[in-house]
Amino acid sequence: MATNQKETIIIGAGPGGYVAAIRAAQLGQKVTIIEKEYIGGVCLNVGCIPSKALITAGHHFHNAQHSEVFGITTSNVTLDITKMQNWKDTKVVSMLTRGVEGLLKKNKVEIIRGTAVFTDKNHLTVETKDGSKNLEFKNVVIATGSSPLAVSEVPFGGRVVDTTGGLNIKELPKRLVIVGGGYVATQLAFAFNNFGSKVTILEKEDSIINFFDKDMVKLVKKSYADKGVDVIEGVNITKSSQTDEVVTVTYEKNGKEETIESDYVLVSVGRVPNTSKLNLEAVGVKLLENGRIDVDESLRTGVEGVYAIGDITPGPAFAHKASHDAKIVAEVISGKEVVVNYSTMPIAAYTEPEIASVGMSADEVKGNKEYKVSKFSLAGNGRALSLDATEGFVRMITEKKTNKIVGAQVIGVSAGDVIAELALAIELGMVAEDISLTIHAHPSLAESVMDTAELALGLPIHM
Image (cartoon, rainbow, N blue to C red):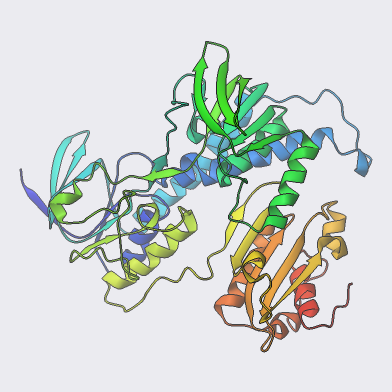
């Protein structure tokens, strides 16, 4: 089998892989990207993007039935789930994936569809529909992403689905049990609740989304309670069974055995790195105990010319982390001395209300007299009032001596967008005065960030 020589190969075309490929090409490298399934990866096809489309559809369906406060009364509002899924797949997902493929071609990135396996430190084979290809590389970036983690007591199949199955469900369940209480689980709980499903969350830990401050989680739980979503925490699932029509899950809580029946069970308890089928031993890359690849701050694996980014490396499995890694690794391969910096990487959950955080948290600095915590309620924001969405707040954590911004949290409408200004402020080492003296459009949700900065300075206008 003939060998084709390549300068830089990217394995995986998700938000890490395709960004690395484009940036490397922009920096003058000849790039080949290998993808076995989806251009755009899990995120664009069966993850971040379609889940937000589902959440948006749920909001529209719910609001169509509950807009009396605006003087709008409706009746006989129905959901055509087939039409909704078609919109998600054709108008959102396909549009983006075609766009990504177009960007790769625009930047002269060679696309090979197939499965890559290493054969030695400078070679790999790709199994394609037309046969095997043997490729020699100077540089290779492993960006193979992750897959849903299975729960042995609730195995996938039939009416037990992973997040991909949940996003593509063809019939609306009257009852839905969600196993897990992380980002995806909590978001989809709201989506299906808005569609009319009776949703129950079963969470192993003491609290859902426990990586956010407790007061933020408390507001999300209140929202669940108000909407009729049951959240059962601290459970140990022991077994499950299913028929053609129902799934029964058995769990223990506080030493007592309980059972719950559901039309479907959606399991979302985390993800596992896609590293086991790459034959990494051949290239000399060693795996950590959790199956991830250890890398330095420049994404090097320790094997010359071999890099790893995204979900398969230590840290949270976020698309925006993978994309950040991608830009850094492309520059490293191009000879630049750069390193990753996750200190200003925001986290966000698209729950109701949305929650987001960056930098130091309020729980983290609690009781520490070196920091000041300032919180501005969205009830004082004109735009939030006009949206009938005043639940939530913006919080800023500053150093008392310098007013330097070191952390921030947002809970409320569009929190995932509002947090960006605060992340930039921390990245640039800004102080509260910098934000307070920046003119913000009125009326806007962003004004709440300015109001929080003024509060941090002891000069609040709107409270």
